[in-house]
Image (cartoon, rainbow, N blue to C red; front, side):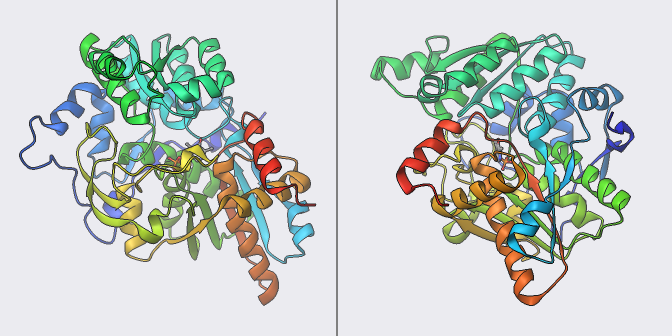
Length: 424
Ligand SMILES: *Cc1c(COP(=O)(O)O)cnc(C)c1O
């Protein structure tokens, strides 16, 4: 039995501790409708309140802690001893293993409270969109935990290419539709223009929001918004307590960045507690937002239905190449994380597919865990830091947020293996 006392009682909100005020979300000038008003209609009220709160600590409802325990929180903090030995590094490496949750990634950490707050309002049905399926899977499970229905608009190409994801969502009780669908006006319009449209995240999201509005359901958000990073802070709060139990002082904290939720959720509590000397956010070289993105107001979604936020962005219309780390193809970086990167409190790295595949293989061979392609980006940085510590003979403690396992990504690994060859 794991010690569920280690599940935090509070989420940590970094907003009041930022070195500069966070530029607020806003409506575009001369907009034909207010995105902020739309947000108020589709989000559960408590989620909306938490999105805009400046309180530092927010109590996690007992009913949510209870569900966190039910998915196996606290997740394990694993010393990657075999990896250290293989690298010959004096550094200690720890994995905070979010792959241990039933849905295989951190996304369930925010799906549970969002579903809970919807349920508390008497809502019986929640709606969202999903690309590769990680987020949709988390929503389907969280909804079923509170006996609610869920409807998930899944981008049609993914629906066809990743049928196993659809199967899990349906086994959890979710209604999954390949988007564009004929269930919404927006979907019907897209299908009229092109009956074979492959779909996109923006279209799926537009459909999910329209569907929620039409039937009075609530819409759940997967990443980027402050409230999602807030819920994900359960990862970092737990890791701090686990490291304290071990008597370890962390030096380097590392995570991968899609929208920024697993990274922020893991690293922010350390920043707030003034723990750690170096924080490294890792993106994909194929989606070079840290190196080439602009820091400006942009839409967080390609459909342009959410309020503008100030962030590092490649532009909402940016079309990412089809890399396997689907979760890192997102065009922007969460506003608070963008600010901390701009203020140089957080460093960044970008790695290409070949580099991360090598890191993934090394972790598989030494530790046995198949990492998600997204997580493998962070692992590449872990290995580089550990090798640097070897060069300088430094005994530092490196902790990485292992955002998810890759057992449903084996098809992707097989394709990469064929393309770049298996490195022995
Ligand atoms: C979705 C996902 C990510 C990226 O999303 P963030 O919001 O940046 O955390 C990273 N890793 C895994 C395993 C994911 O499923």
